Image (cartoon, rainbow, N blue to C red; front, side, top):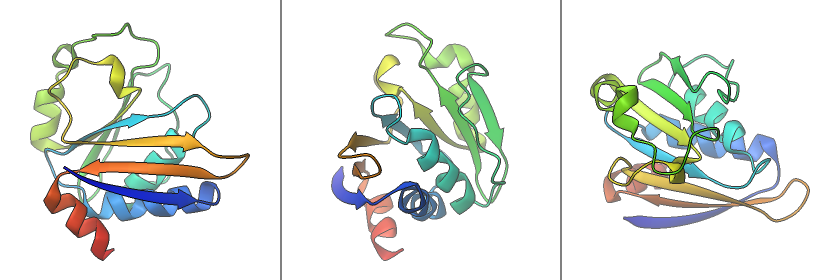
Length: 147
């Protein structure tokens, strides 16, 4: 895993970072998104979906649990906020979804280990400012660095 730290000045920057990441996303990638409420996880996913060639209408799936965004790479957006710690993502068929696309999982720390190929942690630095720490596999990190 390679670590990349990026500062965001606001939601537009966070979406742009997400778009760079989404542009590199491949089928089988599964990213855990971590950060407190309001950190910008869904904003990042909006960019990821756009970068992967999907539509812009991305909302937090807190009540839906799972939404699907077709594009160059289909992005499965999951939100585990309302689920108990240790939740088994296999019960949602995530392994099947990863065969046909990629997944981004908000509150990923609530799932059991072993699913994620990378993670993004978002820290609130101020009203608009965020620090994003990406831990990505080498190939994805290199591709991200070129974007």
